[in-house]
Length: 91
Length: 374
Ligand code: SF4
Ligand code: SF4
Image 1 (cartoon, each protein chain N blue to C red):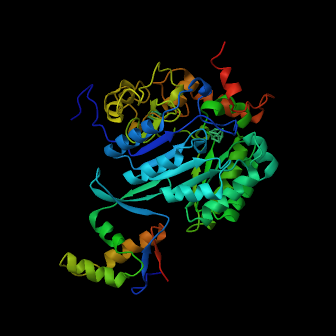
Image 2: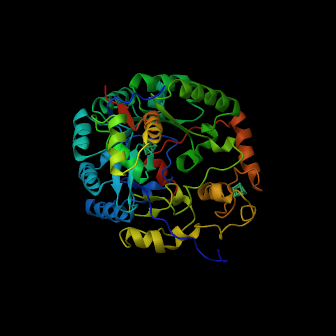
């Protein structure tokens, strides 16, 4: 099962994505849990707003980091995020 | 290089457990509150709690549990939840659900509460009501439905022991029926009232193995729908559970009267007085108090832990369990097969096969007073 590049993605209403000043990083908060994110993972998740798709996230981040070929890495991370319930497909 | 006697760097707390009160309308015989809880009457005021929340948040605490006793008995709960939300905590209400109305659930949501963990004693009315010492089963299920309807992540918690372990299937079906997003199957840990009632609570090895197989089957089946946390009964393991991710590294509990504890069971340790948030700031307590430093790092360990290569994994196990079973809080947790005291755990296991006929002691102020009044 691989993620459709045009499916809109949204962050799960049962989780919270938050900047932690004390840790200087984004974290995901959920019942009994806390996941610390690196900068790129946070950039990906911040874009899961119900409108962005794999394709548009890749486009934006390739532009932001002035690079190419991010599709596979971003797809892999989004699939993990889906499996963990951090994000959902918004259709 | 680490030199002898040096202390490891102190990491800031991440989880704060705010035990708002020891008052509780229920009487669960496995309650982890200290048996002499009725001794501690002076509850912190709203302003004290607000200050504690602010100070811990400033240090980096982010997960917050409101518990007790029954935190709903505090009329300032909504105000504390709102304060916590402003500070950026992810807050959890750990409740029996007793007396909780749909309106109050909505008010707590409006104040910024993130989730509610409802505990139910058993999947069937008579047993659940008997264990709770109060008629509450039907209402608890209603509360669970309201929590779900109002868009909170629904966390159901069931404490497992010999009186409900045979109903593991029923417990899981109940969680499915209620639409739980998370199910915590918490095998009883023998602190507080549970330690007192251990002979009546401990399941046999065969019971435990059957129940675990059922839980594992559902876990597989419900993957992606319900997250099941299974807290293992460590008596049936041969290595102890890690002490709170390391003593004084991650968890801070503040008891109803303001005593600061490195673990919610720590009040049973033979320590004259715990530092109190009425007298010290959270930072002073965390960084400077003797008790938070006492079991940090590894230098305090005697053998067999001292030279054991697993000490970085389990920190020698639970200090409270070591003390409750051996009388020595620096001993290796007797659950460990390497502990010279492991026979104490094996005796308890043997006793579970033929438990003595004694009644359960229910948790209430009257029973509690027996432990300190003469
Ligand atoms: S375990 Fe039972 S008696 Fe103890 S605080 Fe929780 S609901 Fe109350
Ligand atoms: S001897 Fe101590 S450190 Fe080693 S496994 Fe046992 S409890 Fe853990």
